[in-house]
Length: 130
Image 1 (spheres, helix red, strand yellow):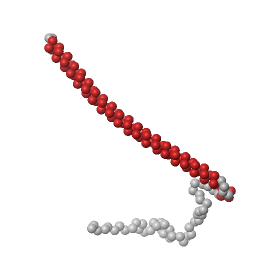
Image 2 (tube, helix red, strand yellow):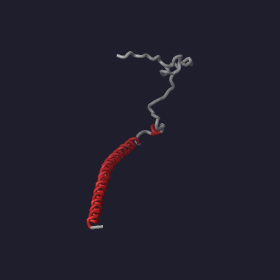
Image 3 (cartoon, helix red, strand yellow):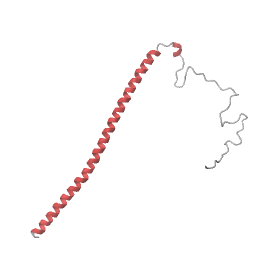
Image 4 (cartoon, one colour):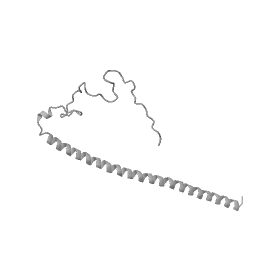
């Protein structure tokens, strides 16, 4: 091998290394920019969630203060009101009575004679196009 061949091979190897380094730098740069964008997005999301959590905590504190006030004012009520049922669906001002037999039935319900209707569905009417 003479000097020209050696220099050509060294130049080609050096050029290949520079090209490979440039491609690697470009590829890693793209990945780093994408990662930085994701980190920025996650940081903004984290800040937004932090704001929502603090707002929810303020609302909970306000509701707890209101509940404490209502309990203080509710303690002054008579003991007869405290003796009434306080279930989740019970209301002391409502009275549920059964409907009288002469009450109209719900639409679509069976007639009072006990027989089902002969044609339970209304006839379909096709409208002309305009």
